[in-house]
Amino acid sequence: METYKTAVVGDIATCLPFRAMGVEAVIAEETENLCEAVDRLIKSREYGAIFVAENIAERLSEIIESALYKPLPSIILIPTVTGSLGKGRNVIRETMKRAAGRDIMGEED
Amino acid sequence: MLLTIPGTNKSEMKKTVSANRMENLKLKRRLELAKRGHKLLKDKQDELMRNFLELIDTIRGLRSRTENALIKALRRFTKATCELSPAKQRALFAVPGVQFRLSVETRRLMNLRIPAFDAELEGNPFAYSLRETDPEVDFALKEIASALELLLKLAEAEKKMSLLADELDRTRRRVNALEYTLIPDLGDTIKYISQKLEELERSNLTRLMKVKEIIEAEH
Image (cartoon, rainbow over all chains, first blue to last red):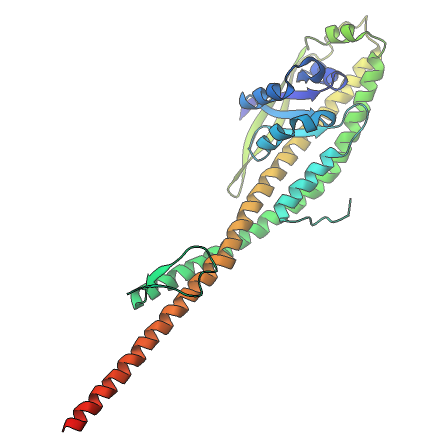
């Protein structure tokens, strides 16, 4: 059993309540090079889970993908105050495509 | 006698084998092994798929529940703090009173190592100025805490999902390589060698008959 840290990456409205709960926050508006900052989080191997706000996920897609099939950290997309963009569900679908070799869900959702 | 086998150039690897019984025996053993390996991998693939589909079902529900809970909590928090200036907000929560630690245990599923998360909160989360904040903030933070629990479950489940998907992909490639390349190739080669050997047998027989004829004609 090992102890890791948790981080959240997003806009200030999403980050603040997490920070209040003791989760480390990388605030997008205040970070100059967001990609680099997140990359550092991953490479430090100190983080077990990283929550990334959906609205900035595109800017980080490469980094997120690079960590996808490693045991740690687990990076998941979270909705912001303005509501869900459905990107989290897309991730599930993309993963299913990889697992099955083709899109087996069709038009279901 | 080294030969390039015709008909096996389906695969890119060019095989040169010598057509003799030893080689044939070796190939037959390899084919047997490949078939057994194929069956095992296929079983593994089925089991992985079963696990994966089960997991997908739970993740679907879990994700929508988590998203709803989180959005609700975030909105509550935003409403509760909207009267404060951004600088004030930042200052209030700059130094959290809690340490959020994640203990990670590794579980095994077949050959995979899958992390399992457990949260540990240390300290008092309400370590901010109570005079300057609305009591609503406390409630919002409680909601955030329960949303955080769900988020961790989701993070654990989605990590397991990706790891399973990756393993499934690799296993499928192996199964396919065995099924469509190696096993047919070996089969073809074995067939070719057997035919070659039979052919040698026949030519030898005719030669002997011919020799016998010549000897008989001389006497």
